[in-house]
Image (cartoon, rainbow over all chains, first blue to last red; front, side, top):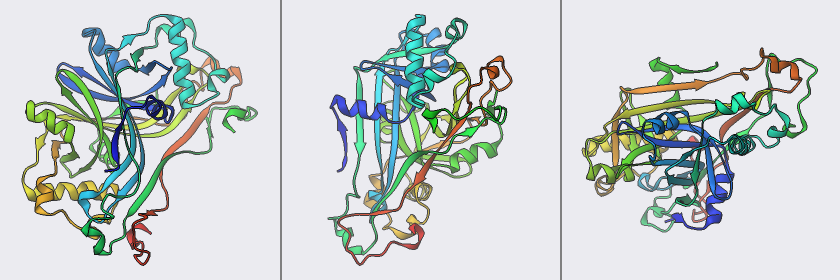
Amino acid sequence: MKEKGRTDRADLDAVLASGFVCHLGVVVDGTPVVVPTVYGATADTLYVHGSVAARSLTSAPEQAVCVTVTHVDGIVLARSLFEHSINYRSAMIYGVPRRVTDPEETLAGLRLIAEQAQPGQWDYARRPSRKELAATTLLALSLQEASVKVRTGPPDDGDSPDAALGLWAGVVPVSLVRGTPVPDPALAPDIPLPRHLG
Amino acid sequence: MKEKGRTDRADLDAVLASGFVCHLGVVVDGTPVVVPTVYGATADTLYVHGSVAARSLTSAPEQAVCVTVTHVDGIVLARSLFEHSINYRSAMIYGVPRRVTDPEETLAGLRLIAEQAQPGQWDYARRPSRKELAATTLLALSLQEASVKVRTGPPDDGDSPDAALGLWAGVVPVSLVRGTPVPDPALAPDIPLPRHLG
């Protein structure tokens, strides 16, 4: 088995450092609801944008959530379909989130979220006004209760009887790739692409 | 607003046709658990691999789940950080899943899942044995209760007062890209890459 749980804090940090979209699970009227949203993190706190969760938390505070960050790294093609798998890195963070209300912390959380998706953008774009901060729903979740699962490497049936079948086996790598920035059609033609996006 | 809910069945089909990883949300002891897994679909049924969900469903059958499929298409860089966003396509499917026990349906569901991740692989690799089918946990979920949300296009503040700030705005495209297949190190050197992977 090349799939395993990881317990090192470094593994959690590595998963959180990649990517910028997570899936936030909340329970609404007894039913799970899983929504994609953006995140950022300090050493001990995960910040997520969370309108659905916030609505749910308003009606039921002290409610646990689960935030899952998943990176898909490859499609594992084994000799047998049973051993087919996915190479991935995934972190699950559990806990009762806190709704951030302090404007300073909201600002800090938004900065983490913005920089996670596009480094350099916080210092470039217009920062949130007091009114915008008040309209922002941010949840903070401790990173204390987290688990990481990772699968890497080739298929598991290379030394099984199926190896004698003479079938090709290996991994199709998959990665999230950023393309060339596309200007807003409404952009004045004399506005240059800033250096941090070049 | 360029973000909106879609109600066309074609929109749901299009989101499900892209990608092969979903996030499955279940409630375990009152707490949401969100795990990544693989999926496939017919016209009316979603099939997901679901060991965690299956464990949970064994203790609490008739329990609702939420399956979310999300594709990230771009990072929307607006003039203001408040208007920063993500271009994405996301489908949420709700319902009480059925655990698939019939070997024929399990086989059909596994075929859909395998072909979703790598077309051509079902006809190439060794099919599941009776024993492997019995060891496979597959959940079936009706596609009847589903919602789709999509955001596309440039930032929303091109005609706002912020346009006068002279800041660059636009979208950094993001996409999941497949690389060149990497052979299993255990593979005999005379086994060629099959045509469907070439």
